[in-house]
Image (cartoon, rainbow, N blue to C red; front, side, top):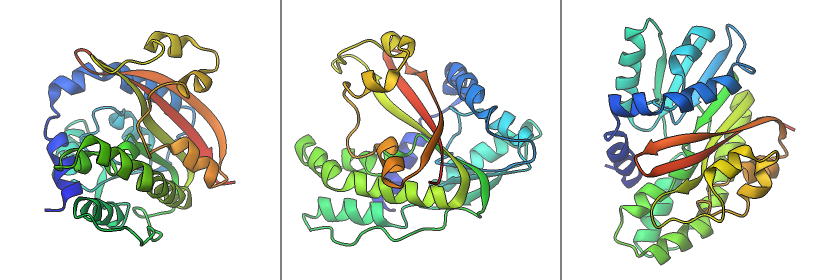
Length: 263
């Protein structure tokens, strides 16, 4: 099995009804944003759908005319599809590596001590065109899980993310903008847990009138900045929202969702 698929599948396998219950506030916050941008009958793709516990997929499916769930983990997609079907929502699943194998090539080269020279080729994501493409917190998972599961030191992992992560993120976001008239990038941008200190509290960010400025001062994941990728692609930001993602006891994330159209 590919390293990237194996790493992400292991993490998806940790999902369950407990997370579905715990993350209900995050789903409600996401719907507050999506409700403004997903028209009735729209064609919608959720990229990085996985278990789908953090997104209001049932509401999306009832609003959309067509809902495609896209992920490289086919088993997680099947489980999500079955769960939605029990609520009367039909969704199609598409098993796809939206990096076109570039993430796997990078990880294998880094672990093998080889250089990475081939830039990511353009990919057709899902079955476009879509009215709305939602990128569901997967940009930070393009390289990090497989690198984290490797035998590399944290220093080498960080170096690999700095060297290759943002260019890969830029390529994926470029393809998302081609696939959808409107793109919603949902990103886990900051985390709080024991030993991982931020220069401010989660509550301070949520209460800030302009949270982006505060966010930039925090400890963010390396090489996966979707906002920077949108700027590099010349996209126009039309809306933004932030909310709390109560990941597990003692661990919380700040989620930043950016709504954009091609420039």
